[in-house]
Length: 245
Image 1: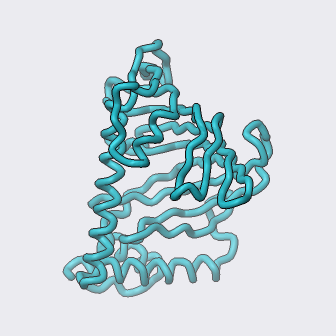
Image 2 (image 1 turned 90 degrees about the vertical axis):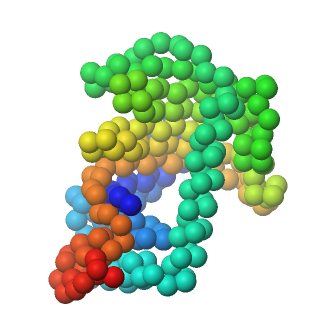
């Protein structure tokens, strides 16, 4: 299994149109087998505190060491991950029939042709669960790179209030989301930017989420055994025979 680390810059804004971020967090994001570690770094990509950074790497080494083992706990954890991945793939697959796609135009992006399509809820679609029922209240546009057969961009708008989490939370009509995707490495299409502008309620309080995330510096780190070797080398530890476990 090929896994990739990346750098994330997450900006929190007070409103969707606010050009200045109220809070910014930059992290080195490393897959840790059964989870993901976010290690804080500065705007220059370097640790702001060497001791704290080292401590985070030590925690990551321990997580990868556990994930690289073959016990029952690891098997259970990977089964849960596989189940979530299957559910996500089924959700993506459902969008093929949950929406009606209409060709709008062609657009250029970095000398590549993109096909733009509108997407509207398909009135004939029958939701299979509470999550897929959300599709009836979303519309937007999707841009396809036909040469790569990949989604290059997607934008969506919530057209009706959506209840989530056993009715404990609600996303208001008018909320927006978008994501840009590029070929970050040969054959690897991943997000470069995402934006969420959601208003709603959680329990009995109003919530407002205006978040922009920039993704960069993707680098292959491999499965846990391979990643563990790299992190131990970065820590100056003896690599040992991790890959032979």
